Length: 504
Image: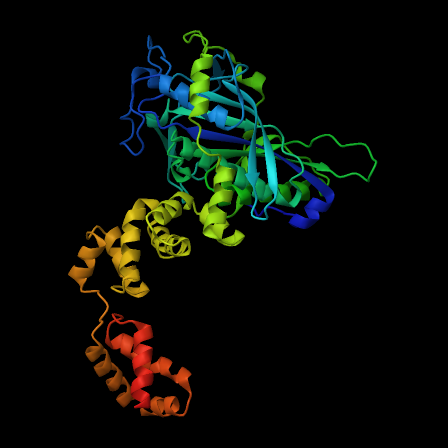
């Protein structure tokens, strides 16, 4: 792929106003699929979670999943939307190699939820209200597995295999109106919005919200319009591109920033923007062309003849409204105030998807800063090494049990890291691992004094410096003692003993 020409981001903002629109697809965690009894389970062998409807077999008819409807209404309410008294389904037609019936059942001009707004808060404290045009129900497509090539993408692949397991999984697509006024914060606004949507669906309990699994996917629309002198005529919106299926918060921010820089370079060079879909490449940090972007007419929407209109009762809507959890923005403000985190510390937790894990750990009795340290430090490091999700490796209760052993003096941080590793490797509880590995801190002063005396005897020059008042030289002795004790000593107590023995 040829290197893309980019304009400096700040220079692009001086010339153009960025305008974005975001489409977020949320897979619902219902037991079965949207229109069939096929199981809705992630990670099964290819083409095993199937029913005739998923494959579009002749004579098979869709039946709407009631739980998916309830979840969709709850999500619409959480987005501040109005819930339609009557909505319907339509067939969206184009060639789907991963949809057996070659069309998708979606909602076109009759979405279940419409006209809402979501409040997000940036790291700077800036509050942005993102306007929601609609949230509509549809079914997911299957998945193409591209074989050959180096990236697993269609580019360079030798052939593709179709897995229909995901075909028919319930989806809600949330579509924003154009978002103006983001200026230099525009990339962060995009990521913060997706993060807020993730928090909302997790709080509602309607989605597993695992972006790396595709439970939440973002299509980012970006366009630029040229700035004019004050008082000049407003310019029309520029041609937009749609970067498809971006599946991490960091990638959402990077993809939007890249498109602003790419489009600015093209426009300033006298070129024009093609209305198209684009693919995001995490390895290179660039987008590449996909297909020309279709308009609604190209999909030949027409009413789904096999499904009746949906008319949820007002009683059901009010019942679900009464069950809504605390809004994520309000929750974040409350937690940050309760925990006393700096903006950077709190944003690090949020961006890592660890807000819930830290919250549960604090609820288990662990100080907030301690919980943050372990989750964003050692546990995140192990998760990164294993390409895993931190919260899948260890539970908040298990981490709290390790911290309790540190607090009571049984472990220091170095030994605690070994215990955490043991828990992740399935060796048992914290207490069992300490006993099995013999990791408890040596609290016997006799053993510590013996090690201190040996280290002082081996380094008489350091002993002389300590006796001359150069207390910082004690670090060399402390290090030698900690090594001799295999890290199973309290460094503060060792320091006390070193100074005492040197003085004596």
